Every structure is written in C-alpha cells, then in structure tokens.
Image (cartoon, rainbow, N blue to C red; front, side, top):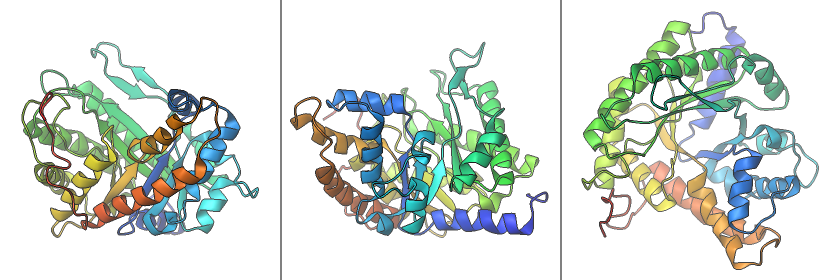
Length: 359
C-alpha cells in the first residue's frame, strides 16, 4: 500500500502513527463541536460562549502532566484556529509540549434509506480541501468516526458495513495524500441487548471489511491508527461479564483481523465511565500477550464529564472552575496512563458488565 506516496510522505505518516502509539500515553479527544459543548455546558450552568470554550480547551491542553500521559489531542475545527492565553495557536502549543495535534474532518451523519435507521458520515466530497487547510494550520493527523448499531437480530446490515468501512478507507487515502495520518474509527454502539459472543462476531466482520477496503485502495497501513470501541456486550444484555472477559474478547477480535503493520489502537470510551473504561483497558493490556500493537485510550466523555460536574456547585453563569478541573484531570490521566500500561489495580468488580437492575 501507499505506492503512490513519496518516500518522505511515508516517513512522515509512519512517524506520526508511531508517536501516537507511545507506550503508556493516549489521546485526549476534544473534538466536540460548539453545539455539543454547549449542551454539556448548559447542563452544568456554564454559558456557551466562544471564550468559555477556548478557556476550557486551554485547560485541557495545559494540564501539568499532559505530556506524561498524552501523545495526541483531537481538535474541533473551531479549536484549531483558536489561541492559547499567551497568543500561541493551539496546534503550535500542543506540538511544543510533545502532544501531536489532529483534526476531526467529518461532518454530519446521514440516514441511509432503506436500512431501518442505519447511518453514514458525510464530508468526503470536501475532505481534500479541508485536509490541506488543517495540515497548514499545524495538524498532523485526522480522525473519522463511523457509528454503527447492532440490530435486534444481532447483526449490522451489509449495506451499512460496506458503505461506512469503504468511506473510512477513502478518507484514509485522501488524508495520507495531504500528510495527515488517518485514525479510522468504526464505532459500534453499546445500545442493545446483544451478548459478548455476538459482539466478537460483529466486530470481526466490521474490522475485516475495513482493513480489506483500506488495502484494496492502497492505503499505507504503517501510517494509520485504529480507534475502535472496546468489545463489550450491549448495555441491556442480561448476562454478567467481568472486565477480564471483556478485555480478552477485545484482544481476540484484534488478533483475528488487525494488520500487524498498524502500530497502535486507541479505544474510544463510548459512554463508559472512567472507572469502567480504565478497568477494561487495563484488562485488555493484561491479555495483550505478544500482540504487536500499543493498546491505549482516546477518551472524551470518560475524562471530561467528571470535570464538568465540578461546575454544578456554583450558581448558573459562574466562571469555569479551571484550577479545580485541571487538578482533577491530572488524577484522571494518571489512572488512564496506568490502564494503558496494564498496571492499574482495579477494585473487585470494577469494569464488569452488570445486567440492567443488577446491584
């Protein structure tokens, strides 16, 4: 793959992928758009202004132990062109601290007709122009999310799988041509009552389609990163599973289909709490064995929602409690870093899937 790319371009892409796959470090996903951030702010009494969003991102990017536990940060387009308190553009600020800045170039989801609500992400038509713009602004990777849902029959339609995975492959091809290392994100939702065996089967099917499409199109696999969901049972599954079983299932899927050429996997949190996501990531790393990939995190909600909870104790319209937020984020990153190393001492039962209504 990548025969159309220059040697210098391949070296650049591989360097970025390897940097993001640094052992014990992960990605802070800060790519929520102004609307999503606004909803989160509104729920905790913070006014959704551009300056508040900038201040919040500045806190996320300047947490004192960030360089110890973060290899990369995913930025929303608005944030790419904002500046730190000292006037430095955010991509430049991150680069100087050894954190690779990246972008989110996908647009909105579109419902595929005739698929009972399954979706595909839009934005490929304008991707080439925007990729150039983001590279020039200092970004060195991109992330494209393709959300998928397992139906009540325990399947995702072939139409949804093929459409989304082929689009991910085309996105990767376009990004690499513009110097952006592509993170491909097949995101299978926790919605549903499917069991762990079904999750393994469907994740294998989805990822196998993705890698074949990437290889068929000539994507340079050494210059790519995977951001998948952990292989969990559905949220409403009535069977109890331990974090250890979830960790083993996740590694099983990777070992069946993922190319060894890709250096890293950064799991999304997908609505899991920090407690659950970190315990499961720790279990994944304990089951890693001689697998060739760095297995780490790319978390948004798991890290950020507890920070925003700190705002609730203040009257609506108060300033962001940035110092408190930064102090809590430091503690969270230590937990995430230990999980990424397989060195976390999880509490008994932490990270287990508990059936609805179970204590």
